[in-house]
Amino acid sequence: GLDSEMTLDRWDDSAKITYDHRVWNELCSLRFVESGHNAVIMGPVGVGKTFLATALGHAAVRRRYRVHFERTDTMLRRLKASRLDNSHDAEVRKLLRVDLLILDDFALSALDAIDTAEVYELIVERHRSSATVVLRPTDDGICQYWRSSRALPPPVPTPGAMGRMLAAGRGWTF
Image (cartoon, rainbow, N blue to C red; front, top):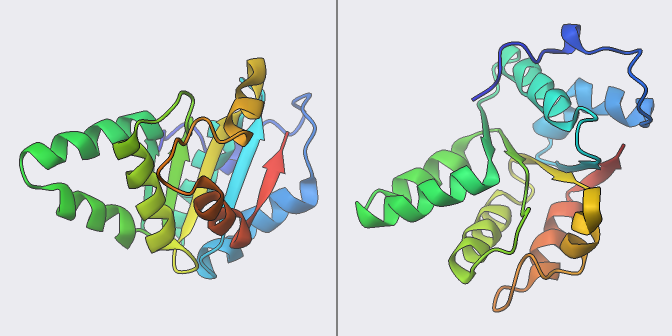
């Protein structure tokens, strides 16, 4: 869920991080949610990616959008477990119904084929109809690892999934 302490009014504008304020202002307008676009937010650990995405989530809730925030690994474990009790379709439908899906710590380690298929299906089904924000740290070569697509192994065509994600949005780096 959304941490109640992470709101736009609690963001420290004097923090010594660099980002494009125009892009941030555009994200805060929530037009990307209204139009079903996406955002990939990348930066080093500790710069405030999770804080900013959570604050966007709170702003969206105040504007009556349905929001779901979850660490990606937690979501994938929950979806795997839901296959055991036949609640998988219902769990996926919940993720597809929200207006804004925020996935923190996206693909920090390699995903197995089932996780890869889950991510691919979510991206494809939400493409241009609902907004998704993906948060990725860039420390210790993780960003290069992710960009090389080793985090999303075959058989799922990673460039297609991430291409859709970025085609309907933009990247934002600290």
